[in-house]
Image (tube, rainbow over all chains, first blue to last red; front, side):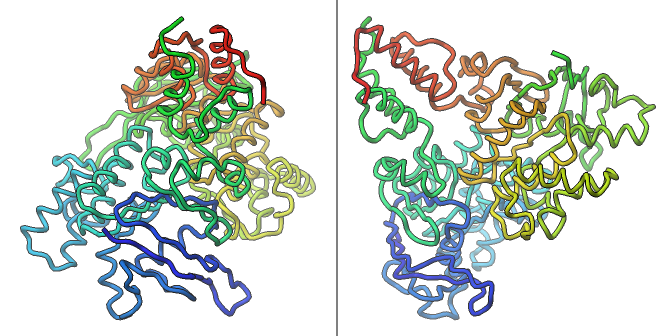
Length: 286
Length: 293
């Protein structure tokens, strides 16, 4: 279970030009190994830059990125091999499929790792299961799949490398509720079975509350908050001040509180709200 | 209410590489009234976007009729001028803001539509200023669109449609890529266009709490109309929705959970405010009163 640490990390785009932009400003944080950590923040808050630093796509302008205490840039020539250990699923990854069959597409990463055929086949099946791709689809062209199926194929392609750290940027955007639950559930299952660390970027506070153990909140290139869903979603005013939100159910709990109904402090799932209210009203008793 | 959109037995099939026809819409008949706010729900691949594209002839149906403001636009004698008129009156905003901006300066982008319609330049100036004001982006008039946030880009895309003075705007998952504040901005613009300007709004979405803002919800499943009604009527049937891969807003879900636990709850709660009212009423019915905080 890999722990990720950022030590005083800053990142500047177009450094030294009139367009210089500070995307990350002295960010220090630790992502605990074995968690599903959610990364939230407004557009331009630095989320995507942060994600690209984790697998060495970008190198910090200042500060260090550590995996289990080891600086990922200690040997810059070996940075490419880091991409097998830290898998990054970018936004709308379905546009990155290119092989003739879904199977070949998922196998692309493991093949580049130089693994034997038998192991590649095993990993393809395993990843297809996590991503919820029926076996019958494996021999189809990726271009004959629906949007949601293509998304799954692209995610499976990264999972097949069995990264120790899996980072996904908006993996469920644009999917219907069932598709969202299946993909996020599959990601959660990957975490449990592979002992990995997972980081999910999303704008859906409801999804974050349901699937993440911890949350990191970025705002204006800085770390604003880090903690459990319970801790983070008990600060609705701070979140709203930086253009974020709380889950709808948290908002409802706040409305009830304002009307004098004693709701517990931290409500961020429907189950919690239902439990609090049935306790209060005494269930079936009329 | 005078209908602005009527479809009759609309059918459409995509053709796969091997020539096989895959039906996407099957006999869809619906009516949208002028000034209505309608949400269309359905799982990925249920035919929502195809339906939207048939309403302004981006696609033409295999069979069936589309009637816009009393004129059958699927009629073979539709003139080119009439086709342009359909495209003007039925504006469309898509999901990805990056795919919708064409110019290098915001106000030129907003002017693109009216310019193509041959609107005189003083009139274009007036419309561009008004449209940018409507979406709260006047101070970005001289900015470069690619430096804006997703939500701001989407507001520019909407301004470009407003500048063509449409009767109806179709939003095809226009909030899917936006952060919470971008989403909030776009949703309040949609409300405003509908309530204050009387523009007919059709929104296609996967977010149930967005559909809860509409006057009426149409649910598509595998190319057919599955349910139709007010948000309260639709979200009163969570099982029917989960059966086709959809769900209900969290607040409505809570009300159903409380009812299952044996607490009497009214059936028409789709917004947090309505749910709060219902819960307070249930507490009061139990003789529980709380001093307001």
